[in-house]
Length: 296
Image (cartoon, rainbow, N blue to C red; front, side, top):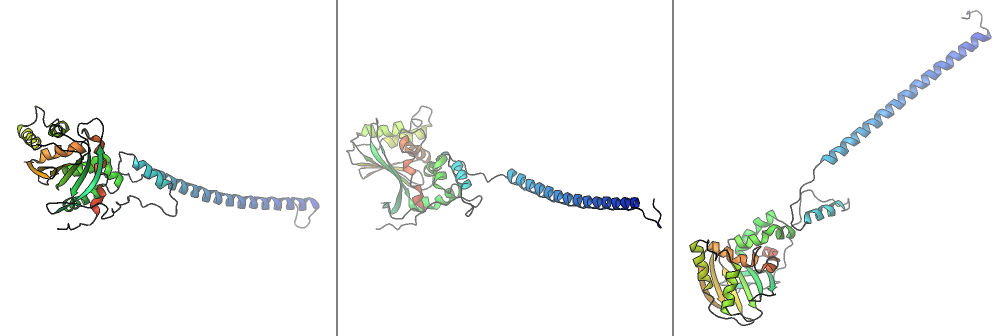
């Protein structure tokens, strides 16, 4: 160590070297402190971002209604590709489009208005060929249609899983099936239309009362029909079944169970007229139109 009274060159060099070392140590400490704070902030933002990412990844989307035609998957892909400016509301589905009133004139029977919900033609190797149209009594069907659209608010959901067919078969409202022949048919062929369309009803193990009602219904077909003439099958809300052969009414049995079997001739999954089961309910959303007061 150098004395305080005398400073030579060696002491001055040692003093300068110590100062430089001290300033270097201070600078390194400041630099390490700044880097540590940056790393801490960066680590915190990454952990926060990863937490948000994991939260978004683990969040389950709202499950869409299952559709037999696969429309649920299509809607999901369409929502994913939608622009960010108009995001889809989670858990909502588009409502049914209101059908234009007056597109098809209503059919008036006994003072009540019936709306056509579908039409098609049966062709091929069948004994009786005809154009078929399905009519529903407007007031009664419209009143019950709201509960169906609550569970299936879109047209695709209505037409999937036989919802529309079951609504017509099991509904407590009047229905009318109008068959306009495209070629002549004998009364035996018209009777066979019901017998072959309901084979389970005419089986040996069928309850006697149900089979008796079915046989009495077939006996109402007592005349031939020419091309262009109509066979109408009317099913009331109480299960009353009546036939109209070229405008002449035949009163049949009252049996709700037989009435369902009769409607399944055209709407059932295993029906002989299976090609019509979808087209006869294709316009079912027309029931949303306001009630039309039938003209007298």
